[in-house]
Amino acid sequence: MTGPAFDVEAIRAEFPILQRQVNGKPLIYLDSAASAQKPRAVIEAMVAAMEGSYANVHRGLHTLANETTEAYERARAAVARFVNAAAPDEIVFTKGATEAINLVAATFGRRLGPGDEIVLSEIEHHANLVPWHILRQARGVTLRFAPVTEEGAVDLDALEALIGPRTRLLALTHMSNVTGWIAPARRVADAAHAVGAHVLFDGCQAVVHRPVDVQAIDADFYVFSGHKLYGPTGIGALYGRAEVLADLPPWQGGGEMIAHVSLDGVTYADPPHRFEAGTPAIIEAIGFGAAVEWLSRQDRRAIETHEQALYRRVVDGLAGANWLRMLGVSPGKGAILTFEVAGAHAHDVAQLLDRYGVAVRAGTHCAEPLMRRFGVTSSARASFALYNTEAEADAFVAALQNVQGFFA
Ligand SMILES: Cc1ncc(COP(=O)(O)O)c(C=O)c1O
Image (cartoon, rainbow, N blue to C red):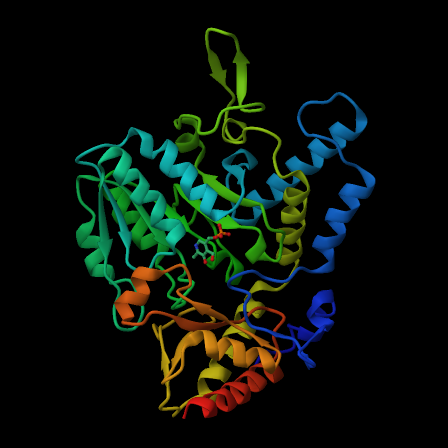
């Protein structure tokens, strides 16, 4: 049960889109792991910036430029507080988690070469695989992959056995977008630090569902996206520990990331601006700041309890369904249900559920190696967010049972 601390109807009232119908049915949005809906606080913060105070940041001496710069930097401070970074300058704004990982691969990775190893896992999203493939092609580094268990967890003993004197980086999901597995972040960070390696966590899913403290887990890098956190698209964050960022070379070159430029050379700005070349996503950053502030005002423990209760309600509702295979049943996992319906293609399942107003994702979930591990080419995924209700969970179970009838 979700307890009195959490009023889901009050939360829902803050999300205008949840009023709409889909195919003549009330929308049941179970695709928040792909991208979450936006509360009024985010929408209004972005509109207010565009209507009330907008100019380019960091370059002007006029009032609007100063106000917008302050709003942009306030958003950075809000994001820093949200993950308990030691200072706002430890947050680099990026386009999203994908760009943040590419930034690390292109800067931290530029100094690596043959003989250096990066430890990853089979569970990773393509965002935390492909940048390292590119680095392997460019620099000849070795990639090592920890396997995934039948339960959909990274095999921690195997992971720790891969970490050795040649390891330069451990890059691991904090929470799987497919199986919901949650990494014991501090434990694996300690294992990597013990051999002098750095640690990057892909926090895209984890930050949404539980408070993250980058200092407590001793992360060197932590990446996440605004749009999964009830914020806008086109913005995300790279947290980097101050001394780690200070030591990195620049990535993209252009305006704003320099100290001085002459025809003979260039000196670079300090982090985070060193990594924010060109005009940034100003309005999106302001929306991102509004999103994390809005989420921080909620009772996050109550949200997690609520989301877990919805997940359990669906799992219990589907108990005994011999036509259902769940991918990911590890203890303590997050509120994501990835599944296969016997005899049905996941795309068909998703399209049929849409007729009931239920939005789920289907495909590889940008995790092809993991699909291969489970021996499937695609699967469907229902992901639960703070605005979903018990009635929606029940309606989803009923709709899925009906849909399965088409394939029985
Ligand atoms: C675990 C994980 N990592 C990385 C990403 C990539 O995020 P984005 O597309 O916002 O850069 C996602 C998005 O689906 C994700 O779930």
